[in-house]
Amino acid sequence: RGPRAGRAGGGGAPPGGGGRPGPPPPPPPPPLGGGPLFRQVREDGTVLQDGLSAHSIRAIVQRCAKDAGIKGAVRGHSLRVGAAQSLAGAGAELVEMQVVGRWKSPGMPARYARAEIAGRSAVARLRYGK
Image 1 (cartoon, rainbow, N blue to C red):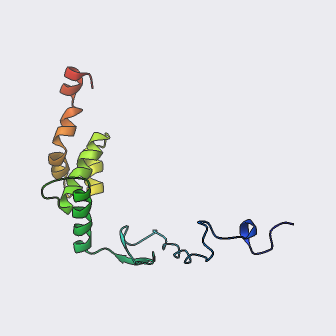
Image 2 (image 1 turned 30 degrees about the vertical axis):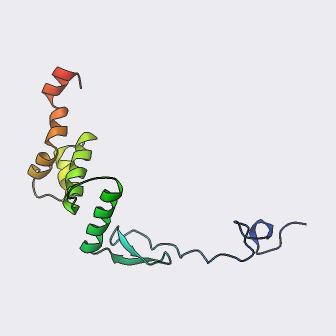
Image 3 (image 1 turned 120 degrees about the vertical axis):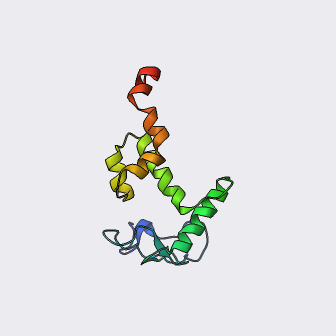
């Protein structure tokens, strides 16, 4: 006989071998078509519409840096600097970095990514074949 209607996989014990079913899965997250990208999540896995506070983001960044073995001060601004450097290293132009980072002028991303930008300059291509 095939599985009964309404029961996927033919029934039986839930995965993991226990006789009791586990807790129900958390509801799906709200669509990210608008609103904050980084959102609050309850202990039961429910994703809320509210964004994370500046304090929460700071704590998460510092905890991740510590877990990664990074010593010294790591701030949220470090993410903006690192993003500019990563974008420049991937070949993004200054105007693209300016738009993504929401800088008013290309001066700040140029400053943050000066080593990466210099590494792909005409002089670098001539000297190092890059």
